[in-house]
Image (tube, rainbow, N blue to C red; front, side):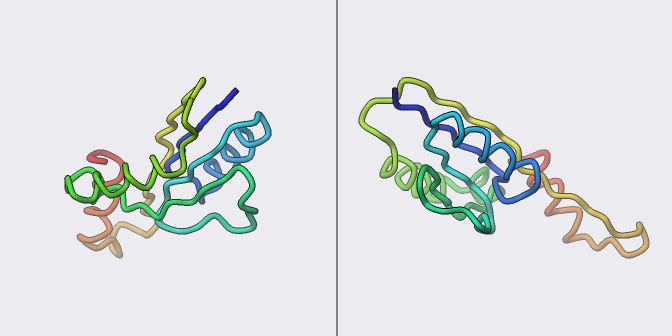
Length: 112
């Protein structure tokens, strides 16, 4: 059986746990994240560097990413799972939060 899981935010704590769980269950996992997942061998896992805000806003970016995903897919897929796990947190005190922090957080958490 060909099983595929596409997981956004695959490099974070929850994302890493999702990657491990799906890989252990025999899925080919494609991790979409802005940074690579550390300490992952390539067996059953494909990292695709992804900017989710660009993905949401730019057709050309989407087309490129879809092409990258398709290159790694098996010819037949019996089970496909997509987990939108990505999130951007602002952990600074309110007085230290910059406009770019808000824009990045809202872009990933609400728009993408």
